[in-house]
Image 1 (cartoon, rainbow, N blue to C red):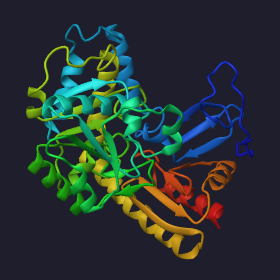
Image 2 (cartoon, helix red, strand yellow):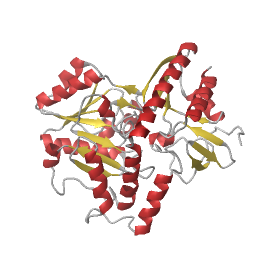
Image 3 (cartoon, helix red, strand yellow):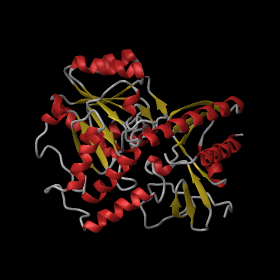
Length: 391
């Protein structure tokens, strides 16, 4: 069915009104498509805001959940050992720079943990973040997030967190202090901040500066990690290795899970009781995450993401050359932003009317985050629909 859906905001009286939800009511999904209660099918270039890297109803996720439920261990708590969490930690450590892993429930929690770990390791307190950043909505991560409209209603925020201009060499040199700064946090590819891959040379400068001043480097890969840019981790494409890396969104295939990966030096500074979480790394979510990580890490899948990303970049560049309201396109792998000369929200709504789900990244950028498993014909169809909307 391809009937035109409604796009008006739908009241949900029993839910706290902190989301401006719009119709339709989604009831099922398969692959890169969502289905509404009236049968309308939507091609999904949102993927749960980057969560559904393997799309909907993927057999790996379904099988992992069924096997985990068969064991009867949904939750045990971190008072006791369970095999899935230990195996997942080993998998992530083996595939990354890290020596240890900490599991939690979301990206914001992973970043809060990273701040604590850096402070304990360094003995210092200040955190430096950058313009365009988005690190979460908890009090410390909100203080590191460059969205004044999110921050202002909840001030005063956590002190000791500074936001300095992105990719300005002199600014970061002035901001990072050997005596005060515990860590610098940066997204290798900013998502909410307009889909901006950061300059690798500048990231290398930040790494060298932090090394010289005893400061930890935190890479926030909550949105750009786990295959999204065409390598398992986005840092692999920068030539820069962090001390702490945070993950979440696609990690457990749609179940809530975050992680902070750390070096042995950072891990050595921590002891039992320094940090904790009741649900983090439980057997059900860790079982699913293990299979998700192994599936995404398949070299063939990652090569396919890179190939599709190259196609998408070239197609969007052509789109920009013929549509005057498109100012720029930016991205890597299957994470792309289309910067417009006018607000993006009306075009997001118009795309939804045509059966294509996209989202914004700031007021004037359309963000595209399709599932990594999206097919070539689906990509072509989605970009063609978007071209119609923008034209």
